[in-house]
Image (cartoon, rainbow, N blue to C red; front, side, top):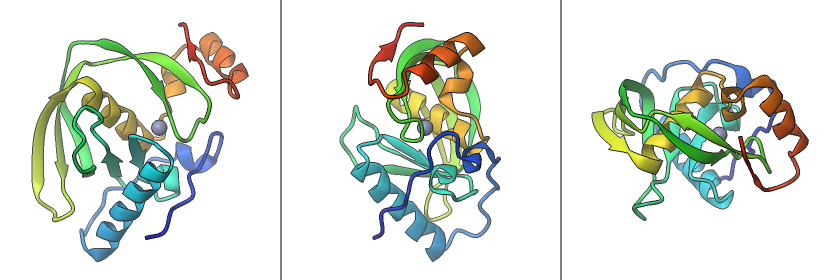
Length: 167
Ligand code: ZN
């Protein structure tokens, strides 16, 4: 299984809105397993299609609280959001940068799996956080967009330093 190359900021492909996946066949399953392989080799916990130059609504996530297999969510949609939490995020496409980001604490997620089966999952904590971060990628949004302009400028100055920004 090939390791895909990960696009990094400011690559324009990261800004495109990804299209819905139509037929879920072998091609999509191969893409999903390549994405999982790529995520793992980069020590990541999530990866979205646009990050590997594929403008399709597919994400892979690793639940780091539960050491099980990585999950694949196709055409994911957040049906409900609840609460709010602040967690330090990073991104394989914005290497060397981390920042505290506020997002809903728990979500109800609807998606298709690699067999085209519909899933509905209620989740919180880190998994909910990773899923929201990855769905942002499908809409061309990066986590650094979720901080204010001045803070973002500060973050970009920190690009090469691996510290969590106090925001
Ligand atoms: Zn990311």
